[in-house]
Amino acid sequence: MADELAGFTIGVTADRRRDELAAMLERRGARVVLAPALRIVPLADDSDLREATRTCLQRPPDILMANTGIGMRGWLEAAEGWGLAESLRSVLADTYVVTRGPKARGAIRAAGLHDQWSPDSESCEEVVEHLRRRGVAGQVIAMQLHGDRQPECTMALEAAGATVIEVPVYRWAPPTDSAPLHRLIDLVAARLVDAVTFTSAPAAEALLRAAGDRAEAVLGAFRSDVLASCVGAVTAEPLHRRGVPVSMPARARLGALVRHLVDELPRRTVTLSAAGHQLTLRGHAAVIDGELRPLAPAPMAVLRALARSPGRVFSRTALLRTLPRGADEHAVEMAVARIRASLDAPRVVQTVVKRGYRLRVD
Image 1: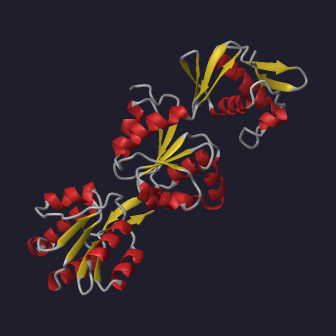
Image 2: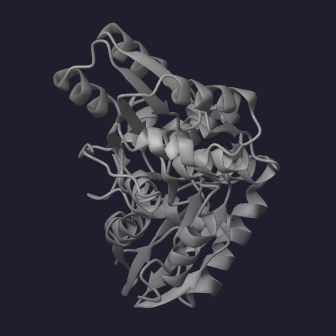
Image 3: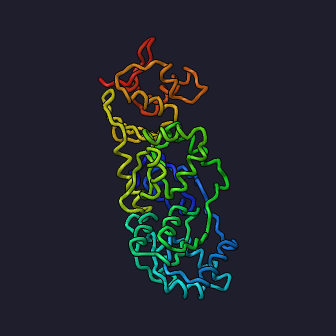
């Protein structure tokens, strides 16, 4: 277990529970790049939340849509501070409660309330469809928002004859320090990470928005060399919409996401025979004859380029294109020297006089 992800670099875009996810990945040997794409800003003192709460008390809802655990807990805690918690629980106890996922269900039950239904997909669209089939004409629905407004869901329910009370408990905001996110964007565009994890759809949108004019380079990396790994289908939707092949576990849980990466990343590695050695390329390391050898980004980029066409001679100019801007042909020579030294296998990369270098496959 300790080395299942050794040699791989994984970006983590989550804010809440980021340390927990990072620890699970690091225990399996991964190098983790922490780069929260968003942060949650509570609205406990916000007038909109207080007004939505009073509306629910004055016009008790028939249905409660509980979207997130943190949102439901935050709403009840805010009501406690206003002296309205018992009145709110009493009103919600008489509603038909729909929970979008297990975290929301846990918060509902912890509050002493009872949930009646939950979608398999954990998507708002499936919740809306369920309620429309059940019939909502003339009914009041309290919709606990998760971050931004959900106008499509609200409008669909209103079109079916319902009155929707939107309950904003928190909102998404940019990270306090955006430098780690921009660093991760650079690494993705340069294909220097193996995977990036997403635990919310807004985080995926935020990373692409922060990429700005590099967004196409980031999307190109996700469509080829960098694995976009999402906790579930709802999270994956913004990436799917942009043609990114997304990898996800069968169950939308952090532990399942980690186990999925343990299974998926080794399948994406390049393994070949070179100069009598068994060579496997991972994100920031090579495994030669079963031994993990970390490599700096420049040597790793050159080795990866050579491994794409074993035996083919690459000129210094061609290999220079794999290195950061500003590097010269001497940097290619240094990268080759470091490959040979790090692998302790000088014959793996062969110099072809006046032509360049190749990965020796004989």
